[in-house]
Structures are given as structure tokens and as C-alpha cells.
Length: 233
Image 1 (tube, rainbow, N blue to C red):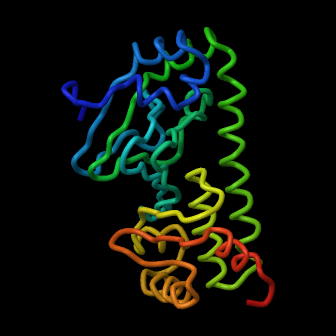
Image 2: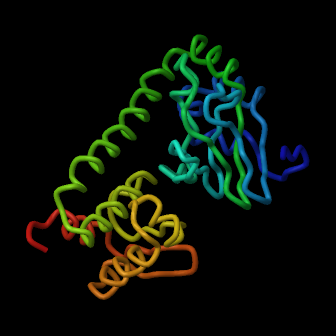
């Protein structure tokens, strides 16, 4: 649901993005075509097999990337949190995504028509290297999770997932709070909710995480990283 009466300022929301980094002209052009969307309840933004019409920046809440198997069961395969885009690949790939993209409840997004985004990239080509770096960063995290997570035990695998999710929010050290439920973590880790709860409990006993309502706090990200990568733990 688009809210034209929102008190949020488009320019300030886009200032910290690659459009702001490209200069005032690029920022003004992006603001001219952008709109603010606010959703009170989870909402389907684009369906699998359909070419998305908008590139969206997450301001508040998150966007879930949902896959389905042949029997119709749904699996959340990714979360795009505040500061993330859904998605740059959709702007340039001819083949439509094979997953659904859904907003969370109480979500605020900035939406830019994909056709206008392509035109902006042609007009301001300095944007391209930043887009490539952002896509490459997500790909590196995915490869790291896929490769390294199979080499460790269940508790370390959960620690690795939490570490990846924190870095996806562009946090490299210190304290970080992940706004994610244990049910969502279970979906990401491909385990039952009970198993996820047990694994988080072990990490909490070790002082590596603190559970909250719909959140996981990591007091010291480097300690979690060391544990996740340790051999024999």
C-alpha cells in the first residue's frame, strides 16, 4: 500500500544509497521516480515467474524471498533487511525470478520503477560499479554459507548462519541485533523450530548470543565468528 502522506523524506532515504553517492543530479532523478510504500500486513510484492516492476529499498522491516518445491511447500530462502535492495539482478536479468518476494508486517520500502532504474543507470554510468559490488558481496556471502556450513557441526552451522546474516546487514564487528524469529532462523537453517531453539540455547549458554522477542543479539560478532570457524568445537 503506497502512502503519499508519509512523513518520511525520499531524499534523505536515498541520500545514503548509491544514488546519493552518484551526486545531486542522480539523487534528484531517483527521487523524481521513487515512491514510499508502507505495509501493515505481510504482502506479496512480486510472484515467482513474473518480472518485477519495481526495485525496492528496505527502510523498515524486511522482504522475504520464498521458494516452493514441487509439492507446493514454501521455504524462506532469504531475508532482505533494512538497507538492502530487492533486487538489482531483477533490473538486468531477462529471466524472471523463480521466487516470491513478500514484505513483512510493518514494512516501509522505497520503490523505483525498474524501467526508470535502467534509464538512470544509462544516464549515470558511475552507478554500475557500485551495483556490481553489491551483487558480488551477496554472492560471496552465499558461497561462504553454502561451502563452509557443510564442514561444521549443527551448533557451529547456526553460528555461521547468524554471522552471515549480520554481515549481510554490513556489520563487521561489535554488537549487532538481528530482527529475526527462531521460526525464521529454522527456515533459513533447514531445521525444525525445536532444533533451532536448542542450537540457539547452546550459543546463549556460551555467551555468544542473547535471545529476545523476535530478535537475536550478538554481543561480540568477532567471538561468534571465531567459534563458527573453529575446528573440533
